[in-house]
Length: 105
Image 1 (cartoon, one colour):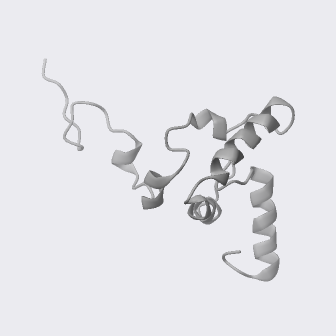
Image 2: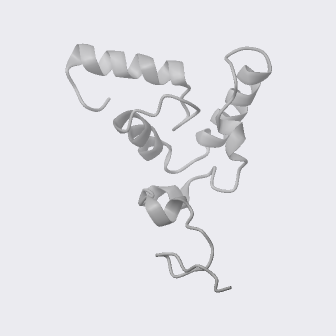
């Protein structure tokens, strides 16, 4: 039986990057080699809060944290730590943007 060939020219099924163009800043992100689960804590207190703080510590040393935050705000990312902010912190930024009538902070 013949192996299927996908649009990406491979016999492997396409990955996310084959379907979605990832932002160019992503290749420079400090979290690139980190466990993605760290950035998506389940809950807001206890161990989840510690997990969010650990993710934010990685973001604190990231050269593209601002781009990441803008991406999260512009694309409505509601879950996880993005650009050093939690879901609640981004909600606050969105509310502030709306009250000021601005697109970016």
